[in-house]
Image (tube, rainbow, N blue to C red; front, side):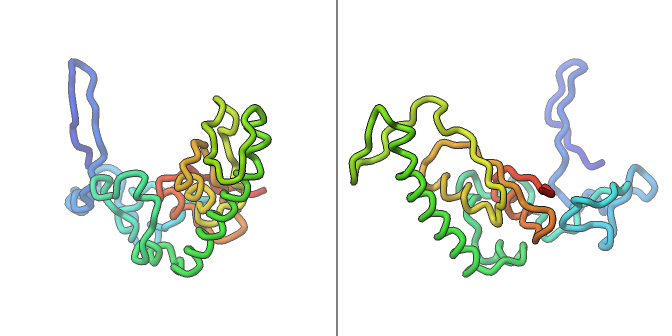
Amino acid sequence: MCWELLAQQDETIIWKKTSKTSCYAARKPGVGPSVCNKGQDVESPFYRPLQSCIGGTQSKRWIPIEARKAWPSRANLNATELKLYGLHSEEFMEDMGNWRAAVRNYWSLLSPLIFSDHPKRPGDEDPAAPYNMVRNVLDMNSRFGGLNSALLEAGKNVWVMNVVPANGPNSLPAIIDRGFLGVLHDW
């Protein structure tokens, strides 16, 4: 299965799946599950029957974990990365701009309600949030994870669940590769 031994102590062993795609090609035929062919190795395995092959090895998105950018800089995609997902930079940047403005606006509207003990004066910085006041956010129509990214950039300490509708374009791979949490869901 192309695993690397990381550590062993007595009967406890820790293995890591290798990030080298060459390992899969070098396996002996008939040993373990086969590698998915191009027709089976799809970018989006959601709502498809399980297959008895190892997928992802032929994907354009295959980037070894060691080669990925560190968090949170990984949340920002460049033009080359956007092309992997079939996204246009203009559309992506417009979506990001809209979410940045929305977060500024929503947070300024919510601040008096959240911080009723500490009324915010125009031009003042947001006071530190009371413990557990706004903690979880559900983005029910997450296109590219823009709300999640805007909250991260604004320094808002919230947990976001990005939901991509199953009946629209599947942008979940882009959201997950940005380091965000997300699900594909049919409302």
